[in-house]
Length: 299
Length: 254
Image 1 (cartoon, one colour):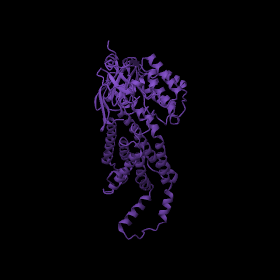
Image 2: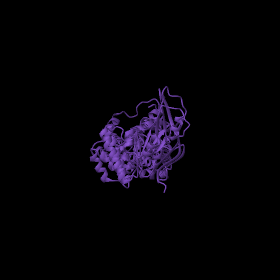
Image 3: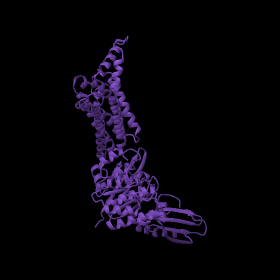
Image 4: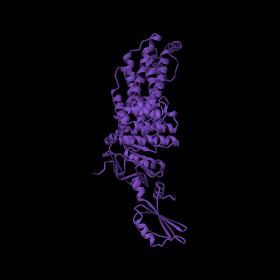
């Protein structure tokens, strides 16, 4: 049976004047997945999230959440009733206290979990009488996450959820997130610049580059698919253009020619043998390498 | 809950505005005795060469000889329209979805339509404006006995009501421009300038016509009639502006 998709976008495009924020974005997140959305600044991560929540209307293409059209005002209200969101800047109601904000938010969500809210309040060391404006950025982040985790939502969309948190708080928050997602089967889509965070909690990744999804899939599959083939020559490595499928990047450095392949190593290795290298090594790659090569940054 | 949020956002503005209106209304009532003493000390039939100016002075003097005329000329057609214009503009500024640093994304992520956000905010603002207009008008009736006078509560309600309905137009302008500009200053200034412009344009109409005269309850004071046309125009314009604000927010990206 085909897996149920909670998020499904097809050829979503969004332009702001002459700036193209999304250029045919195709994203699929199945139910129960914890999906890390990776990308450089300005790659289109936040725009993607805003399209899903109905805050930004795509210029063309379709975005569906729970099978509902995100661009339709009425459907969007229903989507947001089943989705919790933490924004990048954690912009909350500064004039309220922590307790007031929790009490304000609870009635909007029919499945609100008061037990989780009070549990997270003490676990995250938040004071109910503290004014939101007086909270540090890290504490505001914790509050935003507390609210999101207490909504009883089927989908959590988190934009840079650990920004502003110290390493200990990051660890604590990620553990809570994983525990809750595992227990309740909540689908999570979170954007992050911290690859270590993504590797720690995500079971799927989507790398967004220049407004489109460049890499998408289960994290283990992506890791298994990507290989670095390293060729060592006696003299300077030759200039080589590989014709094999899935060559992401080729890099020459002295006697070494390094090829990143996204579709297994066989085709590249066969082609590489023809260059008569001294040695051919097939190496596993880290998520960081995949990310950097995908977005075109020299590692 | 949305109403509670709207109240939290505007409560200090509302309370300060209400305090200013009450102080001003009570101050005018309490000054009645002093004004009467001053008027009595003035020589009758002052020598003013300009006939129209002399007539104007005489009309003004005639108005302040009774408490009804004094309260109307000084408060209901004087300070109240001016202050209520500013209060309306003040209460209408700061859209909950557009104003920077106001938790706009948090609001947008809640399962609430944008139209409901704007509608609730406008509704709460209008209630606050009504309370401000009526409370300051009631204050005239309530404080009048302290200077040995009476002011009919029904009259206070009518004047306060007229002022409220026309002021709601400036409120609507502020609500609309708050969905265009992310700051509070531009909508506030535009609404206030509109108030000034309408007062100037009102000078071109016969005395008992125009929005400013309607806001002051001019026809009710002299003829006992209500300015229905102006009140309906104001109410319709307010509804159109709030609708336009909601439509503007509904179509924009955040």
